[in-house]
Length: 125
Image 1 (cartoon, one colour):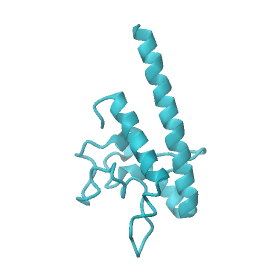
Image 2 (tube, helix red, strand yellow):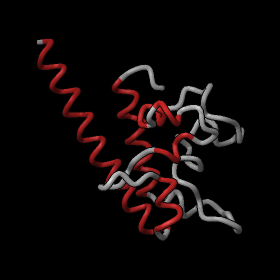
Image 3 (tube, helix red, strand yellow):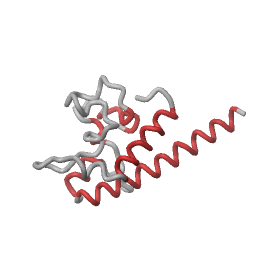
Image 4 (cartoon, helix red, strand yellow):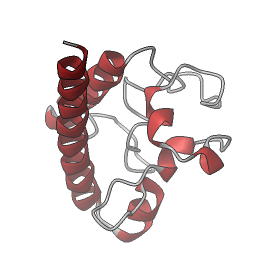
């Protein structure tokens, strides 16, 4: 997990920028669509194909402890309004649909964490 609250927000913003610039559409897979987070430059295990568990992965902060030991724990992040996980969206939505749900989650999560950070700063002052 990231060292600080600011590191987590920075990772979310990098991911949103990658998504907004069409990063997932530029990944040349012929046999499958690009996978959220797993095929992103923000994934520390992307190039190794290894497990995320022993790597400093910012996305583990959003995975419930029950799934943190999975080979691909980021698939268990709830990003939908009804708690839909990335894994469920892969099975029930089109690429465009799950990218839009993910985009909304990134924007909302960034806003929530920035608000929390501001509130913590105000309490300390």
